[in-house]
Amino acid sequence: MAGGNLDVMDIYPLNHYYFGSKESLPLKEEETLDHRIQRFKFNYNTHGIRTCVQAVLLVDLFKHPHLLLLQVRHSLYKLPEIECLRRKLSSKLSMSEEYDRWEVGECLGMWWRPDFETLIYLVLPPNIKRPKECTKLFLVRLPESCKFIVPKNLKLIAVPLCQVHENFKTYGPIIAGVPQLLSKFSYNTPDTD
Image (cartoon, helix red, strand yellow):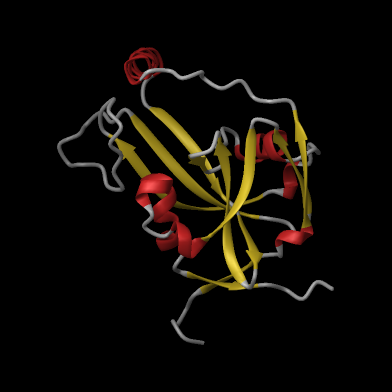
């Protein structure tokens, strides 16, 4: 095998998954940047550093790995955000409450927000002693099939990893960096017929 000791990850075809919808999630309506920063500062002063945990979910489509992303409106893309990994994945994307269906794997990477501004870094600058936010990405291995139940005001879309790679303008630094974080894996689509 080329590449030496790559970890092998099983990913299943997109047609193994079923999609339904549920009530819309409340979204922050057109909040201005100033209001968002003020809310961020208030929450930081009240609770300290904000920790976000997001899931990296992969499926196979056309013999190529695709990243599942939530699309908010027509242009904002997000990885599924999860607070308590298994519980939140089940409540936001699956009909059942079977928490053990989600195989939460390793932490792929962490991004740091040193200030209340929008800049986010893969490495915390050495002069920053009190970062404002940490975003952690975890690999979640999907079961062979399951049903995703998505809020009506969001779309769950499959985007090819090659399209996401370093496409900062469309997907932002975290999502655009996912393919590089996954470069240590080779992908296997098990014969499930």
